[in-house]
Length: 123
Image 1 (tube, one colour):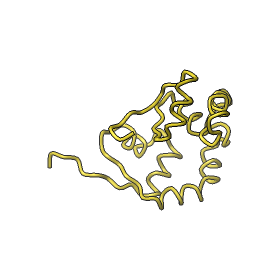
Image 2 (cartoon, helix red, strand yellow):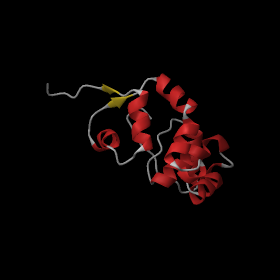
Image 3 (cartoon, helix red, strand yellow):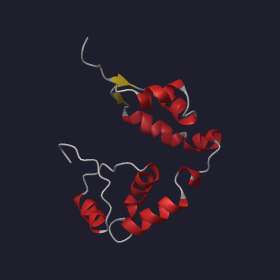
Image 4 (tube, one colour):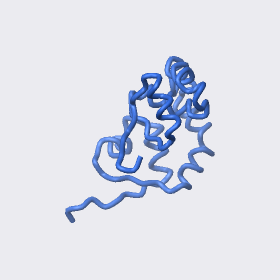
């Protein structure tokens, strides 16, 4: 089989990878070119388990994204849409790319010098 088949990840695997970022689960999820998918139930279950994730990982909710990233994101988003602050904060924290279809957000952030956007054929 030359084409990679999609791999559906259940909550337990994702939870394990989140709790132990140096585990084989995390290595496979983050270090391969496989295409992984989760159903919306995983998001619901992770939300229900968020307190356990924070407790078990021994990080506070605030430790997950630094104060500097949260403050910078707030300054970027405050007059555009403050609801997008967490997405921008995580993007800054990870030095990653933000994938959004919100044109108002993109234009506003670009005016402020933020240009860390993931560009796909449909966004």
